[in-house]
Image (cartoon, rainbow, N blue to C red):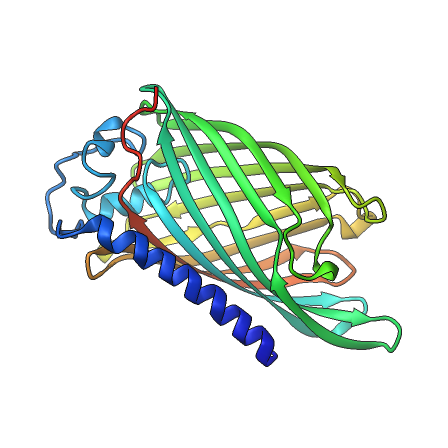
Length: 319
């Protein structure tokens, strides 16, 4: 990575870290964070059960209960997830060499109870990208780095407990990229849906988005893309360890033939820990792309996730 890229990545991490601890530390205050040996006053509450909210969204839960709720993208816990992706791309015009892509993602999750029966979940996604670029003029490779586009996901889901949980909503993307060559220069939106099935220490589910461009620069190709993140987690290991898999399949309808699909399979591990008073889940996953574009695209991905839990800023129903 170039010095400018490293400085930009360090700045993004520093800002995310500052926001994380500025928000989380004072909110937890002097109340002990959930620990592995505590008895949970909230009992076996469902992740969206109002009894969680009455107990500050996790203060009285054990680390095992917090881990189970964080494994559910529709849980009522507020969290501040930071991801670091290391992706190895290959393909024409770099068919013989891997070229790394670095992506840093800050992804807060903010569930808000609208009523006693409906919860509204917001998930803005901010990212920084460092990617190789090819100059067809001189046939050489360079690297471009900067802020990537902004994405906002939102869903509405029933508040009451269900073994199968469904959420419906939408996704919106806007070209906030700091470098024009990294941007689609299109504003896009579309539907989004999540399905989660829970059984003891297992969680299965999927999160699907479809984006269509609705406005933007005319000289750029329209957006017509699908993404499907499927996830499986088993949290039955001792000492709050878990095995997980959460790859994201993508389909670009504008691409031709074999360049349309990217299909990974993955395996990873995670662990729930405490950093001082702050409950944090740490995950590491490796994905291998069994189907990928013939042109330059992903072949391998290493994903590190750090997800602190913070008390909810809005605990009571708005209506």
